[in-house]
Length: 461
Image 1 (tube, rainbow, N blue to C red):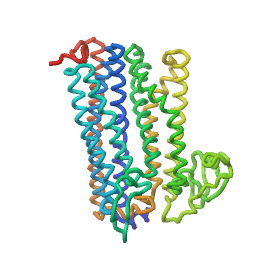
Image 2: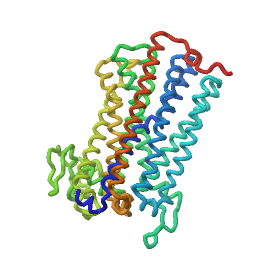
Image 3: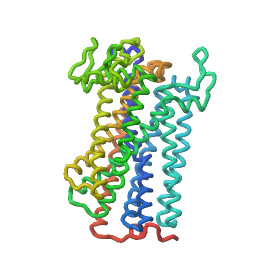
Image 4: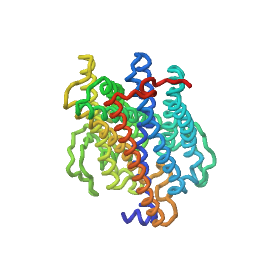
């Protein structure tokens, strides 16, 4: 802690503020990127099968999609400005390369905002075909936005496409700066996580309804579609996640050593589950699986894994950061494994019986899957960001060299204001969703036949 203060009095509050805003914003990303796809899938089912219930579900999901997009726009904008406010030295030196991804994300944001507006407005004014085709612009816009942000983050992890002379950026190769080595696995790993999380989160709402006795066609369909998407993608994520971890051995070996809390370079390296590393290299409270880490990385117990001590102390995560990275990585992998088991259970029942599971235990676990998915996403980002320390641009610029020169009191005050603002945003967001849910339950209970529910595509005036 003392080292952080010596590096700059604003360093600690800047890191806390960035962590807080990033962790808050990322809660909205899965629904923001994946919910348009799930909504269109439900609408397509409604059109193809002439199912008014599917259309009703899609109509309601589109309202939630729009609300969370508005909230995400606020938190995402704040997060973008923070790079310039909290890390001006990085932006001043590398903004021409790092900013490319955010420029793309900005264009994608405006495209998505326009087509969400048309999509919502068109429910009562466009033909089924025209309305559905209009919505097809939303998934690519979301993917483009995700690509822009992940391109920027990947550049921080594996910087490329820049020429530096005497500490100054003199030229940028735009394509090389956008398509850095880390993007190859980081994009696909996070994209799958987005869709899996959105699927489990949406399905968890209807799993709770099932446990409360609501088991009609509406609840079954609203549960089945997102959960099936998430379950089908989970085994793919296991493979992609494994490839991503292997890539870190080459691209960011210090981060990988922290993830596995490997202290010394060695072969027959064990996989440590849980546990805390101390300054002497001893591991406490962990379960060691002999040679498994070497086998997973090099397909042989003789594979040599670099340890933290092979890096200079000032070029690797410290003990606290290593433990945070390791526990976050373990949590992500553990929750992913549980999700994979739940998905296998669901797909097995679906394939054998051609119907949804009817086990109370299954739906209890499905109700928790949404929370578990969010925890996995959060822990994945903790692994990525904390594991990169002490670098803000890996191997090129340290976090302490990028931080603002503003007084610490200013940053602490800004953080306090943001906590209050985000708490208010969260309160009104949750209250709005609860009120929408209550309204829709009342409509279902009284079978209110409002025009937009009875005929989602009309009138066309």
